Image 1 (cartoon, rainbow, N blue to C red):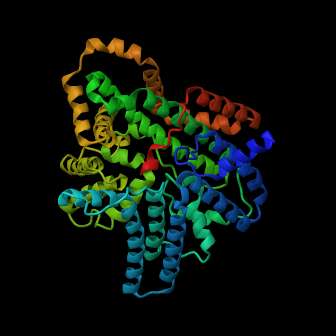
Image 2: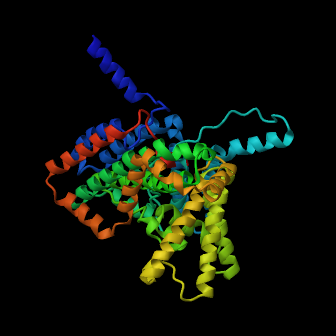
Image 3: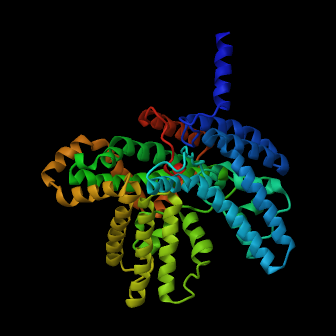
Length: 499
């Protein structure tokens, strides 16, 4: 009876949503369920509809385990934009088409604004009135809403622009929108890239796809569960929580640590998402391309969160006029685009400052390239010395932005800068390094791995592709074992789950 009770409890745990224990890619329960999921998935190579239903049901379950009953928002968005897409495909009247795409944007952005910014609006209204005008309970932000809303909007906008034909089956659209590898934290996959892959028959997972997918999953696990989580818990969080308790050197290393943490966390998720999709027979575009190798701020945004930066460019910057309406308007469009990109991350002044800071940097770089024709957009066109200097300057400008992105408020960010510039005692460095030698060592490993030439990463990936299955299985088991040795008692959600 005890065995039966334990089994019942285990099954109940799998079916119950626990906000304190979300299902994430780096958790053991997800890896176990994914292995079971792929076993049955392998028998559906020649049955696209069954495969789509099976994956869609698992995607809904995955979202429920990650974000609770807010999965109904997926249904709302998928139904509304599917129907709007069908109507767009049936009419040629320009005013009618504009009204339909405006309706899609209104539904999607209205939903996003309610869940993401209503708490802020209510707080401001109550503060202005001096009392609680609105008795409002905090609204929980649904996991991944920023990503699947942007993904769905791109579908209707592309149909409006006649760059995409509307789907004729709702199941195809729901599969595209809810596909679990990219559902809760991207990458933001375009419909025109993904939809042609949905009904492939038979399903093809080549040896190259399988090996590359496994390599990305393993590197994603290392980035997230070994590098990001460890340096966050054991050093970075302590500094950002109480910067005035730490020296200038510790604050500076905390900033460097956060720069590595957010990169390893988010690119680790993207690597695992792309790898999981490859194992299921689907290809996603690259979302990160060694961004700290960038020699200019323009290059940084071509390498960092590529799916979001290209989305903002294609659907916001170009819609505002891009660079077609004169130089001043171009600079203004860049700043506005990045301000809204910062606001997309959350309803807080620090995100707006971060976005505006990057917008000003992008506009300034574009201005300087016009003023000095020898300045380049990317490091590839620079001589080695200039490229090295550009990388150092760009990295530290990005780190300056990360301070306010991570700090709990603007005042805390200013405290960090104050400590770095006024309390930097070199005599303390040896003792600090000795006291935090493990997180500092992992930071060094992370940065070295980031800056090694791409050809070495390609060789490592090629080795995994060529390895026998047994060797790769042992390698994956070893990585999971290392993760278990260094992981904290509590699951550390991916940083971009909060956006």
